[in-house]
Length: 318
Image (cartoon, rainbow, N blue to C red):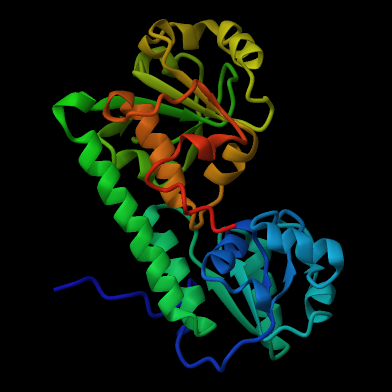
């Protein structure tokens, strides 16, 4: 009666039957984090320039034991081939990765195309695929189990009278007058939906550029801003909060001081569709239902986000 595990990658190629892999290349930060979570850093020989977690990968790129094979959006065929890879993992949300996977396969190199990180289930599938391809299945299963275990604990906390009722939330990538906001079929919206909340822009798919008049009409109870343009200080938060456009201020979220900013390293984590999903989930659950938790979360969250975590504190995979 259980749902079967994923059997093919995004391009339809079976994920079973690969020989043992000893030289692995990752073309995205999320994939690199998956490899780190299943303790496969020692077989990574190449990563994209944005892969900065776990720290062992950074140490490897600095020492030269791990090669940089191009940017996330523009991987280099020559640099990838220079690592003599056994397998290359690519992200299907990037057309350049799909093209690269086809080019590598034509050259006799195994390439696996992972699913877009549109929801929690696809992230779990990607972890399972990576573990299966490199023969780290048991480690992948453990990571998946741990993530679901934390999410179950968080769900029990937020669906109680103490936590309050359903929360209408808006999730934005910037504090602009007409911002990009999360609709349905996005990773962060998928996470928020687990914790007794409604995305006010769930009527659209993906990330949507909305006009300013839509914000007061949607009237969210809480607003979450994900940005790399601010530092996690009270001064920066006060400046952002006071200078939000008038349309943002015409919401219950602004009037009640329920505007949260995720920045610095926390913003990087939230925008990566990887194994730190449990830590993202805990932050989101605490924002949506602070009364359900003993730890008080500040309105602006940055590099120090781990100090506020309880259930997922051990799941940085660093």
